[in-house]
Image 1 (spheres, rainbow, N blue to C red):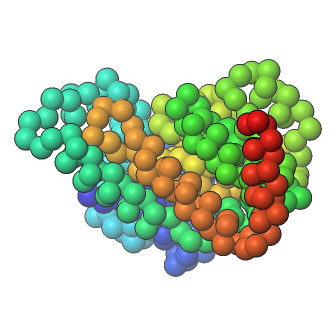
Image 2 (cartoon, helix red, strand yellow; image 1 turned 180 degrees about the horizontal axis):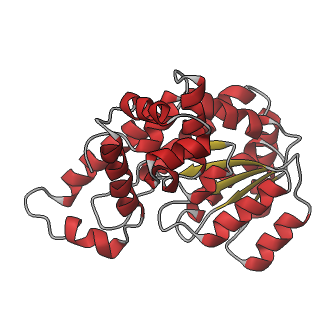
Length: 283
């Protein structure tokens, strides 16, 4: 891929300054990303209820010379989105020159910085507002590897607020978690490329039952993004063939820090109580 930001990020940035017609196109592209953008320009315009020139003006504002270049960028992203460790192996394994430690410093530093700088503060603030409301139960969920992040966030939330649960990767546990879920619930889902059907299905069902949905994902966006209220993407670039969750972990830490700022002194008694109980259990 080129040095240009992912198209989905460009679309999100453009929404604030786009005309009413262009915003319709943005919303359609984001709701059915990236497939909607692979349609002929006339069909995309008809689906959005705008003219073809409106679509082309938006494409130009995104930085593309024309619609074919825009579609090629989407195709390139689609290839990246479907990349597996085997696909990535030839690109990363056995590199000559730099030591893996040097590559790691460069890759992780760049990934963390670019991810945190790209996420709109308003999205983080909206996520924090949901997580800070102690009246709303919070459920975290993830996949084979991203479940580690879901557990990590849940661990912090349990110390800061009541009614927090992590749902492990199992059909029975997930079904039970959905039984009583409703409009007051908040689901925090983690889903990265090679997206996991179980996580996507859980998020979609939770949303249909009225829950608010916060999604942590990669720059190419999990299919769950079309259902999510808040989307927090992070780089997955790594010095190895395996996607890295280091930038995503940094984003989780940033959200926790923002939540602590929002809660102020409220969690002090809860943290003290937690420490006392932890000591009692340890004995």
